Each structure stands twice: as structure tokens, then as C-alpha cells.
Length: 181
Image 1: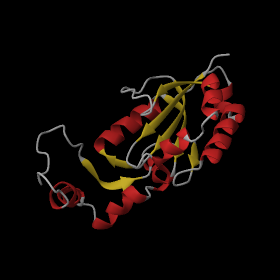
Image 2: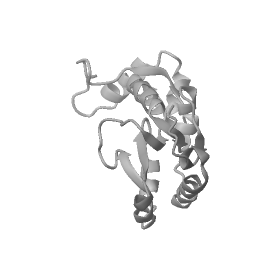
Image 3: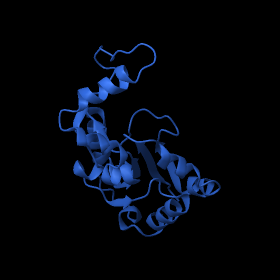
């Protein structure tokens, strides 16, 4: 039996959803028999591949790099899941939205200058910091999402039940006809 191509992605968030995913413990062995992990911060794979069957996206969309990656993911993935409250609603990362649409400079000033103990300066070279978006967004604000898996983070038993349901029942994962994006 051919294994499904499975990916996880981490945008703007705390990695709690990925930690909860790792709490699947022994079920990860069973899952590995059914899926091929083709992209994940857990595996430190850099480029998002084509032909992904299922992707869990953790985190909110905070910067221009996230936007670009998100569009690549949607183009190359059959089923896309907002994984955790940051991806579903923006949650904690979107707290900076209360500062207003021109908050990026304020956020960077606070993080790199005011809160620094050593070397209080914002990185100045291009390419060091991706440009922040005016507002932090949930994933569905930019691309079509097929499923939401809420929680902060979703507990391992909920992740397991969700994955088993998808792997056993999702029509988009059952047929041989691939349809992406």
C-alpha cells in the first residue's frame, strides 16, 4: 500500500502544536506505517515539496515569508488543516493587531531595542528579518482550508482521533486521482 505524503508546517506561533503532535508517542510508529513525512520542522526539511496529500499548518500568518510559503503549500497540497488556535483564529500572535496597522516598527523596536539586554539594535541588513504584515492573520484569511483542528494546543488524543478519521474516511485521501490546490 502506498503511503500518503504528509507534511507539517510551523508559521507564527510557539511550536506547542508540534509538541502536542510529538505527544502521540507510540501512535507515531503506527502513523509512520501509513504516511511518508515529506516536510516538517521536526525533520528540518527546507523546501516544501509538490504532491503533498495532507498538511497540518501551525501558527498565524505574521510576515511576508509566511504568505509566500502558504501559497506554495496550498498549490501543492490536497488537504490543508489549520492546526491549533493560532492557525485557526490568529490567537496570541494576533495580539499585536491592537497596536494598529502600522505596528511593525513598534513591535520590532520593542523586541530588538527596548527589551534587549545586550546589543539593543534592530538588524539592518536586508534578508535578516522578513517584513512583518500590517496585521497578523489566521491561515484561512489567505488560502482555502479544508479542516480546522482547534486547541491551544490540540491535545494528542484529539490529534490522533482527527488523523485517524481523515486517513480512514476523507474522500480526498481515498482516490487515486490527485487534485491539488
